[in-house]
Structure formats: structure tokens, C-alpha cells
Image (cartoon, rainbow, N blue to C red; front, side):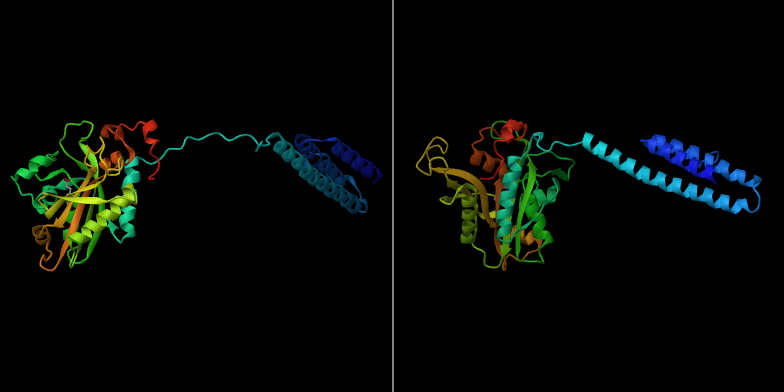
Length: 344
Ligand code: DAH
């Protein structure tokens, strides 16, 4: 028994000397493993007398448990030390200046489109979109521009086949909405979208551009409603002091039709080279929706009337930000785009 006690303190001494997880594991195998010292003691029991055996066994068990507890406590301690070491070596210096990021911004055409749609949404209009590859039916026929009508010439476009084309104006969304919502009057929609025409690209023409169509149909809608609405639009786009002017014009889908001018933002109306000394700048086309357009969509034109307008978003951007070449809106030079990162 005495031997056992000294054996135990020998083992503990060894364990106390070990100061790494690897050493401890090695000792665990050496002391408690299948071929370890404790197991060897167990085997000795066979040679003992019946009286000695239980006492010896109990003592060996006690040693085994003690060593076991010692090892697991020591492992915990050493693991803690190791984690602390690791944390200290991987310390993050939060005072270091952050890496600088390059922020992009929305395209000015997107900013302008969203601003216009938001303005009309605030007046109760719903945003509606339509397909860019459009049927001749909605782009021309329903807009009162039948086959072989000379007005088609002005909006020559890219045909996909005899019936389908890249839409030339967002009026195609208007004619679709009229048909779709003919039983849910009144109609109040604002329709943004890409449009296409077969144009030679130059400073003011692009084969692809963006329009926004506005449409309101209800009972007793008059030209004055159109004028008031467009005044709100002009003031929102170019400032509170804006005034608008309606000039007679011609579109197949409106009667009467008007061309809408806004006060020149550069000279405020006194005349300058931007407005060619007139004090006015042309902004958009509009009019009272032609009764035949309503009837073709299935709406009673005796009971209902309304107005529509179509604004060129590219033109609005160019006017607002003083961009002189429409092509610079499509070449995506980030130096230019970054200059127009907000609406105001
Ligand atoms: N669709 C016309 C164009 O692209 C613009 C336009 C004019 C739209 C008058 C309208 C309108 O809704 O009433 O030239």
C-alpha cells in the first residue's frame, strides 16, 4: 500500500511538470491507457490473497479517479491559456482607418423617372408598365394610327415580325391600360418605359430613349385639369416659380392636342440662347384622349373623358442638368454619371 502512495505522488509530480496539452495527452496514455501504469497495477491483483485484493483494488481505483480528475482540470486550464494566447495574437486594432469604398449612384435617367412616378403616385396615380416588344395593335392601331397612315412615318421603328415591333412610345402602355381597366374606371396611371425609334443617333436623338406616359380617365375631365396637373409637374421638376404654356399641336390619339412649354430655367423667361430668345422651352406632348381611342378600348366616350401626356425623360434630364449630348447618357462614363447623383 505504501508503494501505491508513492507511485501516486510520482504520477502527480509528472503531471505537474507537463505544461502543454500534447504532454498531458501523452501522460494520460502512459498512466491511464490500456497498457498504462494503472492498468498494470490492476493486473497485479491476480497475484494477491483474497484479503488483500479488495483493499488493493479500492486504492488503485482511487488513484485512477484522482489522476483522471487532475487531468481533466489541467486540460481545461491549458485550453483556457491557449485561447487567451490566440485572442491576444489575433487582436484587431479597431482604431485603424477603414478601407475606403467607392459608392455608385443611380443613373440620372432612373433618378428622373422615379421622381416623376413618385410625384404622380403622391397624387393617387398607379405605376403601370408594358412590354417593350409590343403588338402593332397597341402601339399604332389603338392609338388611332391605322395601317398605311402617314403618321407612322414619324415613328419608324424596329419590327420583330409583321405584327410585333419595339414600341415607339409609351402611348402603347396607355392603350393597353385603357383596355385592361375599361371596367374599373376612373383610371389614373403613370407609365414609365424604354422606347425605340429608327433614328440616326446625334446630340439630341437616340434610337433608344425613355418616356413616361400619364393617363387620367373619369367623368367630366377637362383641359383645365390637364393644365393644372402639368403645372404641378413642371414646378416639381424645375422649381416653384415655373409656369407652363400650351400650344396647339397634333397627335392622332388626342383631340385637342397640345405641345407644353415650360419657362426657360436659364433666363426665367426673359430670353437667352438656351431658349432661342423665346423665354420658353418645349417639354412634352399632351391632350384630351381622342373619343375614338376610348371607344376602341371599349369605354363609353359620351360618359367618360380624360387627358394623357407623354414626357421624354432624356429630354427632362438634359434640360434639368444641362447635358448637351443625349449620347452621354448612354455611354455610362461614371465621371459624368456621378455628377448627377440626386434629383435636386
Ligand atoms: N406619344 C407621343 C410621342 O411619343 C407623346 C404624347 C403626346 C403622348 C401626346 C401622349 C399625348 O399621351 O397625349 O411623341
